[in-house]
Amino acid sequence: MQSQILLVDDDPNLLKLMTIRLESEGYIVHGASSAEEALQLLRNETMDLMVTDLRMEGVDGMELFERARYFYPGLPVILMSAHGTIPEAVTATQKGVFEFLTKPVDKQTLLSTIHAALEKSGISQGDFFESWRDHIITRSPLIERILNQVKKVADSDVSILITGESGTGKELLARAIHDAGSNHAGPMVAINCGALPEQLLESELFGHVKGAFTGAVSEHTGLFRAANNGTLFLDEIGDMPVALQVKLLRALQERRIRPIGSTSSIPINVRVISATNRDLEQDMREGLFREDLFYRLNVVNFHLPPLAERVEDIPLLANYFLRQTNAFHMGSVTSFAPSAMEIMIHARWPGNVRQLHNVVQRTAALATTPVIPDSLVREALTEEGHFLPSLNQAREQFEHDYLVKVLRLTKGSVAEAAELSRRNRTDFYKLLKRHNIHPSRFKEEH
Image (cartoon, rainbow, N blue to C red; front, side, top):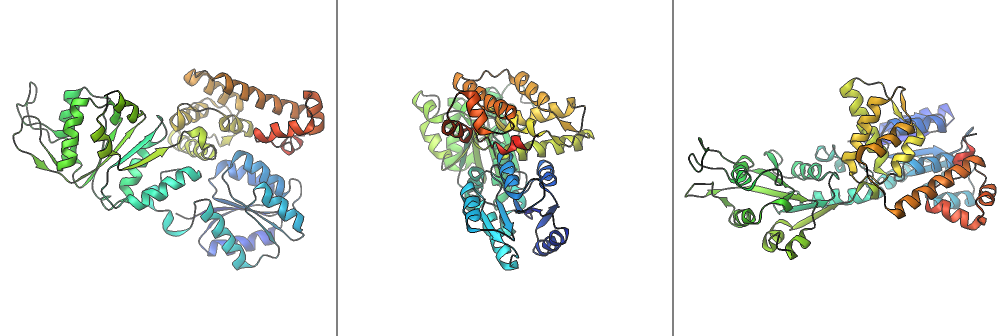
């Protein structure tokens, strides 16, 4: 999969030349002649890197960087300038710009800087992007680290346990592990261990012979045999009854299963991936989960962080789900308003990616304009789950909203905002930094 680069320059000739250069190296290039056009492209496309000129009419490159960083925190940015000074370069890199290049930029220097930026952010051309991970939408260093580890263990047959809150994408990761491995040509079979009563779950996993119990009118092969030479994904493994855990442990140890009612065992060649949102170590202490099975399943552990800990993925996922929704329902909604995206970035998301998907579908269905307004997002977040924030979370949200409101009133003037808030300017700046609020954004609103 090719890396996508957003190239921003108000010189049309230079923009065209650099586009040709980068496309010849295999990159997908999206050109923009202004900061406003660039921000619109960022809302509608998944970019891996932004390369922008510093001196532009209207919003300059530094302002564009700060606004892009606010909504897309993980996006690496390279700044270019024909009139750059050392203090400007130092300031830019201190603020988080990946590199500051002086025009005219040598082709090889530009290419090596782009390669380094993509590598550092966990994105690169070539083998890193393969089909096995195409369905995982991320710019989060936390997720990229997991995917790098997946590549290392994919070809082995060790058992893997995926932990994380509900809705974080555990089954998607299991699918990626399967697709990356040497057994990817084999089947991947999934079952939710908490969705079936014990006897039915045992039959689904191990199969049964005809007449094994009342209602067993024919032989059933079971999922272990269905997943032979492939992967069996045991979702919500923590909900498996203790009695059945014993039989699962034996199957994993002996690599053989015995269907219910059978007197003979059958060899199996199955990789087992398990997942849970429970604390299995606590369950072991309470006698709800067998310690020997835990260590058999947890040879390698991948813990998926909640969505609130990878906020750089929220705009990517929201726009991805919006494109999916439009394609499925023939919709005409194009994007989220910046204020709507701001609300989503700062939301708690107790339901994680699954909740975000639901909110996008709901707001797209109710939108009466091509751009989804913040009112629809706020309403969806309020009504969708009835999630009451903690006192600290409510206080943080109030503080954030208050800072935004006072900066809007003062058109981005920190001195006036601090005076209105009855805080000294230093304390006010600290508050803005803690909430990742940039005063310059409010100057541009007027």
